[in-house]
Length: 267
Image 1: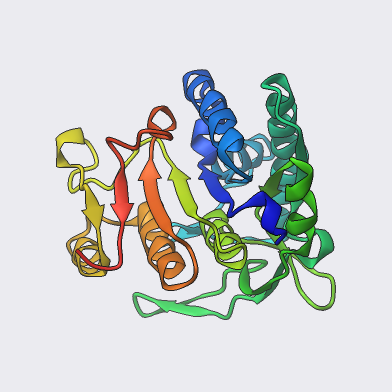
Image 2: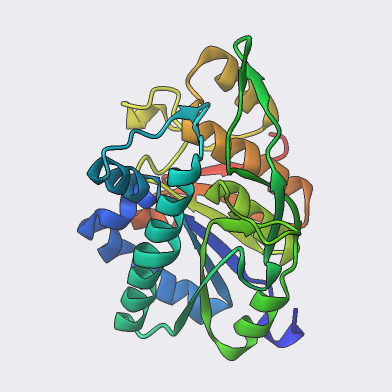
């Protein structure tokens, strides 16, 4: 990456928040502040929007351990919802806040190169995730070309294989892989919960920090599960790479991170 841009901040925003006006009202001013401090890459989820579109089509998606099974129809829904409506909506909103954004997906310029996820054994059963990609390699050249131009890449979580097949890819893992490839100074997971909690319904149970041992215990005890499990595990992976800091925070705490959880290698 060009040295004149500095190390970027990679922000992953949960799709759940993208339909909430109050969350967006907090998110965009914070993004503007972060962009004034250095380059920013925005990665968005979209599970809520995909599910809503699936409902309109009379289709019920399946999930295993917080990860979506992607049938032929689910893959089309992912492209329509993620790379189509949602990505364009975010680029438009960025413009409304004086940020010049460019919508891309992981399939563009082979940004996120994947292979089909092999079958998993979950609770004694074999699970085929369908058109779900596991990341093999990230080529950050596209982003490296955009960031020095003061552009904000808005990345939809799709990937592509060597044959040109498009895949659905977990947005948290996309954000992690991009942060590692760009040697990001920060990786911020923005969620409604705003932190890791021992009790999801009790804000007072928030963890200031979460290391690998705590994460392992939380998974075993069941209070780290589903999408939060994916976030914590990918955050730990990012810290094993070249990423400086990783936080799980709320849209109203994106700058101060006073109520966030910092994911750390060890406490």
